[in-house]
Length: 355
Image 1: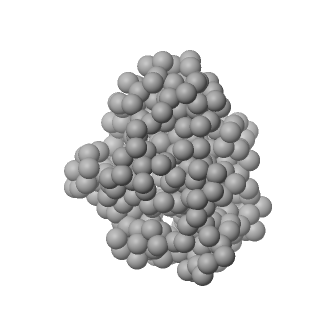
Image 2: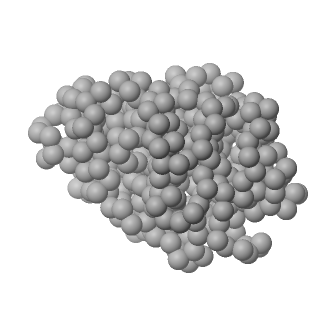
Image 3: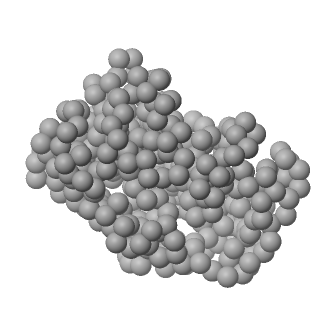
């Protein structure tokens, strides 16, 4: 089996390549990356040393994809992953469109030409901001948690958020590109008869992630805390109660393999996957973990709300568990310890990440 990974020198792409090589004997991996993201160059030599074929190219250019070898599956891990992209830094709105949606058209044409299956990595940020902001919350142990005793909308419960939760706009420009990409991928698969699986992921995190304040928050926070960089609890009273679930790419790799091995042509094609409520943590809890690991360092409170800020997200894994016998296996403490050890070995990592 040959697998092509777009964005292979990014954190997720490179981590998936490593995990797939460890799990599947004889798998052939190749990848394309434009090396635009700060830090991505550091992964190129490691991938080549691991026997992964690397192609320097840009999926926004169809001619770059046209020269790629035939693959059985494509994992689309290339994107601008910041929810603030196109609005508050991280490139213009036009660049966001080109990176996250227009480029997918070229990937889909590649899949059509080669009858390759597509594994599209989508995001928890395709969900309605108003619906997320309106969820009933209570504060427990220095973090928000869903008030399951209140009336809840469809698609959310004690196990987290699933595919039935509202995607009503606004969902952010970033979320809109991912939601539109989901639709285009599924339509291409149906029209040209190649398999498509869409996975809406929680917050992917682990050692070697290029963390910045607006993306890769777990890696950024651990590295910034260790270096005693200024940190802020922004919005929601400035108390750091907002919660996300941490999800390791090696766990995602297990789900993607199960999808590749599933032959069925009907049934659901979109799934949610993440750490789930059991792997969720607030910023205040994350800072407390860092305090215990590195010594005390206090963030400054800021009550201002940024565009698209939401209080709580954790993904519901039950449908993926039922259909693919899959569950995440890496706990949040293990993810954080892995990041911390990497941060200690790489004192330059924030600069490498472009911070």
